[in-house]
Length: 402
Ligand SMILES: *Cc1c(COP(=O)(O)O)cnc(C)c1O
Image (tube, rainbow, N blue to C red; front, top):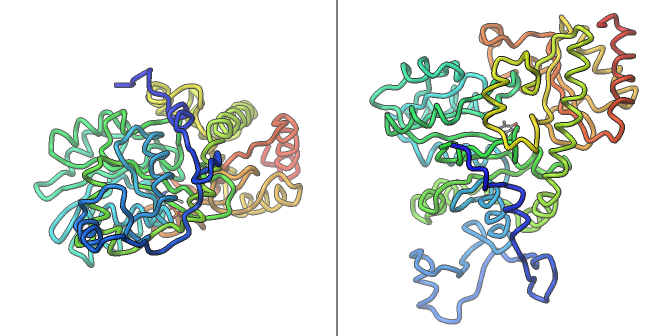
């Protein structure tokens, strides 16, 4: 399935911009509304018949379209639509695809907000979801009913770092005429889900893609037809629910996107370095780049190898009290921040059971293997990762974790 001629970072690099005044960055459009020289053009634009004309910035703005274009190029889809947050991409996408009486089959290990949306919110709209172990294709297929419209997963799941077999899921989706929606937030550049058969690819831009923890943002990448449907002035969930990204922000996200490939290589290098050493030291370490990871081979075959296995890893230190003390000590030693989120230049760590996955009931957490001594790391861009390793090891020794 993988196409070796496709390189997401080259696709971004190959875009060329000439700003309004010859600037190497496109000018930022800072208007909510747009003039028309003739009333007829305005009418045609509202009808969706005037490519290149703007009517109102909740629908599109020049700055957002530049970022849309770059992210569509990155994922190899025809089109994209940026939004004010990752949830602002996920929720309209699912509501565009499903209505009363429809059914979704979703991975059970997904971002806490998405889980809460599917478990608590969409039933109010008559949309039911069955949560499954996404790594078992036969279990996924068995959950499909005549009402199922969408198969939903994350490429690498939060926080357990399970890997979805996207090509396998795509075959199941095609067989049952479902739309395969993949949240690729943890693995930009490393994995190109649309190349593996995903119909819709979503990112929280908040994380790696923007990479500076200074904003929230999201994107839906898909066919031109689907993106147009999201933006349709009469029936589009993005247009009508209104999770629009601001133009000033999309211009700043785009500047950060240009260094994503350099950052991802360093995140992956550092995480691989630490994971190998922590595992050797006897810590329970989960990282897709370790041969001990249950999906290591699958993931190895899915990734664009130069970007590595990503910057996310977990260790299990036995219990929550130890996890909390260790995180506080690591923060005190300036090894990172005790904070949720990911993709920052500094390492971020949190205990998922009490933070990002706290929407998931305790008994379900246990069932899916989310133990309370688990610490999730988003490994930073540290220049000298051996120095970081030594300092982290010192913290662990002091708390008798090692
Ligand atoms: C953070 C995150 C989201 C939600 O994105 P926001 O930008 O916070 O709305 C969705 N999916 C995954 C995998 C995430 O990590």
